[in-house]
Image (spheres, helix red, strand yellow):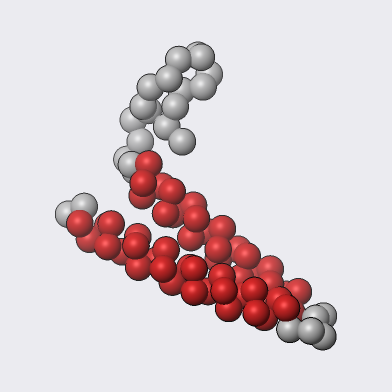
Length: 76
């Protein structure tokens, strides 16, 4: 995330968010987007697979959200 790829050298940029926090944010965003998509797909699904997948994603999103809250709480 924080490497300068434009000049071909590696080094940290001046980001207000560290890599571990950024990773949690990105993973949580991906899970939330997946939940939204699965809810749409579930409308046309007779087998219930997308509802099952959405439930799994919700569980994962909750874990990520808890980890993010702990991380932000310890950053104070």
